[in-house]
Length: 158
Length: 390
Ligand code: HEM
Figure 1 (tube, helix red, strand yellow):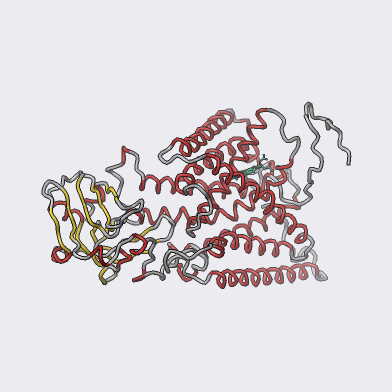
Figure 2: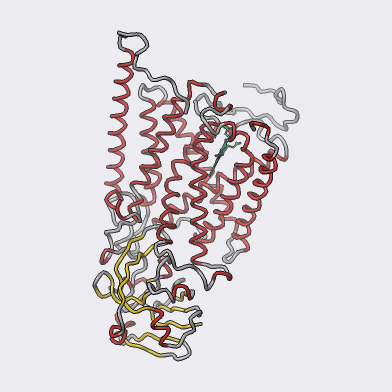
């Protein structure tokens, strides 16, 4: 907390209390609302989502990270993998939905082909960025002719 | 490895916690959490507000039951398209955000005090509800329901859980957020300066991922981008007469036999019945209005038919009356629809007989269907058989 503002603790407490109240609305809606639900299946699916993410998705991501950080073009590769993983996560239900859709206008596309196409495009963009990055680094490492102009960008915050 | 039962500096730890993983990677820091978190927070807030709009339009509280606004005519198309698009864009944001804070899952000691336990519990609720909302919403748009409960009430309830736990999370982390809000904030500056370009590259990649999932799906509602619609569950060009369908006549149990000799019953102080030919002989109006599905897809179309208010006036229905519309379909949650007078009186609201210049096909509601502005698709009742002033 910069500048020692005194309103901030009050704001925090009020926002936190509102948050707890809104969570209460959610619990009420699920178990006492218009269409009350059996709580246990819901709790199981909520916990299951965390288990699948924290137990499988995140460790696999970290494992991939162990490999990626060793690459020269690690930033481009990390970006490419992130795009590919996100596209795959979003496409998962249209790719793998079992059963026949209700009618021909539901899931009408060739999703496997489209997904592979997007992945290929991502790989191509990643390769281009990695190569241009490598060239820029080579340029930065070239024998300098004039001092102070080594082509290197000044470090920036983010 | 032998760990001391009570690590130094910790007053009362009931058990040791061996094998805690260590994280040598970079960017698991509060600046990354803040920079990604605020985008994620914005996406979640948009989802919550647009979700509430959708809920109220479908299940209005008593106060609004007869006064929902019928304008802007594109309102629901916009808000529900935004709901689904921001939920999809939130997928990479959530994945990166959780990656950035993942080591904190193992921060020790697991529980320091009652307050700390509650705080961790609230974080667990936050993560669970965020993952669940995105997952269940996404699967719902593909009409895939692997869970044993009904989607709508649970998605609605967990939405409140998510927004509440998010508000609490932001309140708890406010000091961290404030000191990492900007590139030049004190907290950011105290992080290793060498990480900054790397973080920048991660944030650019996160933006690229959000952009990629948006561009490849948003064409299902933003028709000008339909040529980029590669991964959405719907495509604006797939459907009879250029309009996607959800419930077909066959599914609804409406057959050629059930529409033979069809007459519309219009109820009011002077009730009457009217045949399809007589409807065609009434003044026909043409409107351009979208079908905007709760699942996020939408497509505009040209409709012609008779104004609902002309039909109701003929039955002597009071101007302020709610209108109950009943479908021929034998069963289904949307067989009976109640329309606030704001829609019924709107000159754009039709009992449509034609779509894009052709007679309504059975799957689009032959012999007659409702089309109203700013209304979720499920309430644009097809195969209408009765309209009554309440
Ligand atoms: C759906 C939304 C969000 C989810 C699921 C989420 C999840 C998390 C989790 C699991 C943690 C670790 C908590 C702990 O162990 O103490 C965390 C930390 C944090 N979050 Fe969020 N968060 C969300 C939104 C936000 C927003 C909107 C902001 C701020 C703009 C934010 C800023 C932070 C900060 C600053 C930390 C501390 C990171 C650190 O100290 O390393 N989060 N978040």
